[in-house]
Length: 188
Length: 174
Image 1 (cartoon, rainbow over the protein chains, first blue to last red):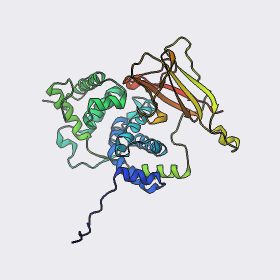
Image 2: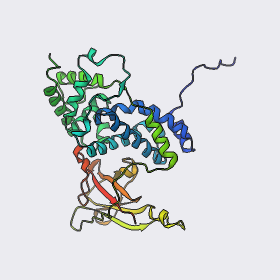
Image 3: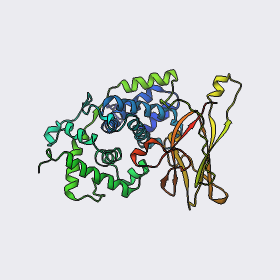
Image 4: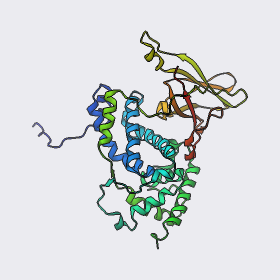
């Protein structure tokens, strides 16, 4: 018996889209960008602290990735490859903007799609952003990669070039600093 | 998350509590895609770079490492001068090191891929790699036996703010 046609439309995989892009299909690249704007926009926004810079970082990363797609040797790992480009673009932008100026509007405009309001979790995101803004750039980066993007220290080391022990120290320092800055909110 | 750090349970709980709201998706505008597509369709430059400056041909006579910029145009064709001037230049990266196993080069030009540009060992512990680069500013670093090592013969990149050793090279327009 012939299988009934599925009513579900399966999204093309990353390797399929990469293959189509390599054949000149820009629409396929638009699909990839939408997929990873939603997934990686969070990192850029939290690291850079405002929507405008986050969008610029994503645009640069997407453009660079497109132009060097031939060098993406493992299309099944397109996400990791793109994320590495984005992390470096964020570093460059953060440095260009200046570590203090970069976070001029902590909760500017960007919408969240989460189901629970941050306040329900016991700590407002606005307060957290203010705390993040006062971390040293390398501490903010390490905290976001570890606790928000949930990478292992091994993955972080490969991504940033810092040693695992240095990264652990950055996270620990971030923790201490955030605890100082957010102590009122974190009344235990 | 697996506890692979040196934090105590109180610190981990605290960081988890901060991280939870930050893990919610942030929906940036789809103008990101629209702008990129417009940029790609018009062939505009990929990334805003610093204005072209004179070639930094830093070579350390007595240092551990050196970067030599070799002013050789590759891919020269019969196209007009404007095209030729914008073509890539061949840049040779050179590192003197006692590395045992592997030296690679990562930077803005190869998407920071640690496997993309291996250096080749030569006599006297000199490792080299040749990369075609268009005029512009690039950050890069060497990876020596798994550790990042900034090129001591080249200017330090401002992105050292992030605590990792990177250098910068500016390739001049001919």
